[in-house]
Amino acid sequence: MTIAFGDLVECDINPVGDVDLYRFSGASGETVRIQATQKTGPGTPYFELYDPGNVKIAERGNRWDAISALEVQLTGTGTYTIRVYDADVNETMGYRIFLQRLVPPLSPAPM
Image 1 (tube, rainbow, N blue to C red):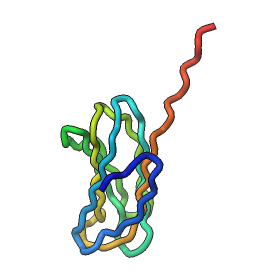
Image 2 (image 1 turned 90 degrees about the horizontal axis):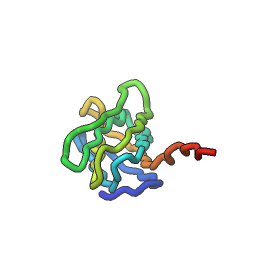
Image 3 (image 1 turned 45 degrees about the vertical axis):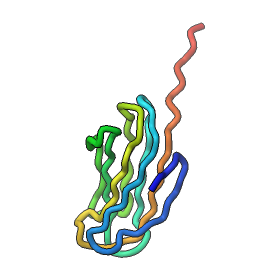
Image 4 (image 1 turned 180 degrees about the horizontal axis):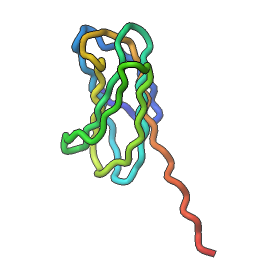
């Protein structure tokens, strides 16, 4: 499934062992925030981020927290993949995932 910056998507991990994939276009140097929040069920959201070469560059999750969030600077330009699943891979859950591009800090102009 394609996800765009600013999207809030609701989905489910069901049946047990299910994995959801989200793809987005990113550019080298951009900083993105990914947040997955448990909505229903006993499962806990866990996610991994893969770069355009399908190399895992980040992961986030916590078996004791219903919210997993990550900010990461992208290393290349192309299609990135977010892989979402239950942290223990033995529960179902409803969850929300949010993707945000963070505005880079402004560089001061010389006077």
